[in-house]
Length: 154
Image 1 (cartoon, helix red, strand yellow):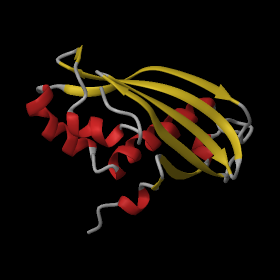
Image 2 (image 1 turned 90 degrees about the vertical axis):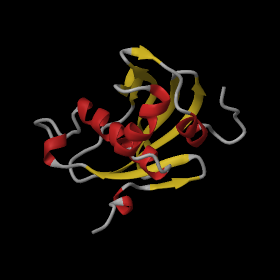
Image 3 (image 1 turned 30 degrees about the vertical axis):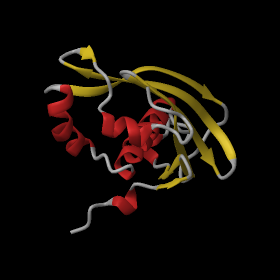
Image 4 (image 1 turned 180 degrees about the vertical axis):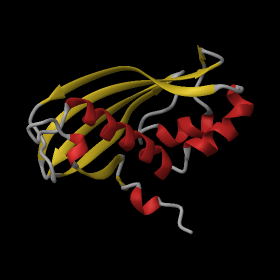
């Protein structure tokens, strides 16, 4: 049985690239991608970015219990999105995800959804790490993996 990493895209430099095909279920009645579908595409990008950094969320949960305590999780704290151009049914898109800043209990990510070289959607995402319902410092292993080259984790 395979671990499915071949489905998780690839990391090129500091950017994770994930291919996504647009299916009928992703579109509205006109065949254009429904705006909420981009949120799902970007969530997949963030999840597979972590996976390729060696941080499967199930494994992260187990290993971070000791450091952060039980009941930890990530939440999207804020997201700013610019919808620039539409995607349509059967398009093959690329979701780009990269870390901008890792600080304390949060990390800031930049995401883009592209069709070829054409940028369709841009997003800035702030993710918080919580345990026991309160913000806690991101575990050191994840902090090191997510910190961009040249940027020192705090």
